[in-house]
Image (cartoon, rainbow, N blue to C red):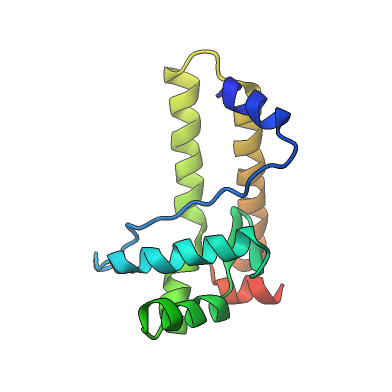
Length: 149
């Protein structure tokens, strides 16, 4: 981790970093997206890197705007993309994300030697943002609410 951090400090222009969860399921265990949807996520990333689409700021990073994804689903897959699907896929799940931070922190504190303090600082900053968002919006935060904020 230390090597990655030092490498990043030397970059004149830092790259955008994206995270995608292809394995989201609803409360009944049904997949929230299809494997071909990856083409849309990748196209959105390309557009974002080049400044051709904007994004919504959330406590855990930036997410696509619904209108951009709806357009891309139509263009790339010739498929309708509903507001309901978008909301299910991009709702900020505060309890689950806080639990994930706890798991990550525990692993790095108990099982990994010589972890830079910066990792724990970043986790704490994200925890704080999530707790503040939960105070304002509740445990499950719709992306449409954040877009208006």
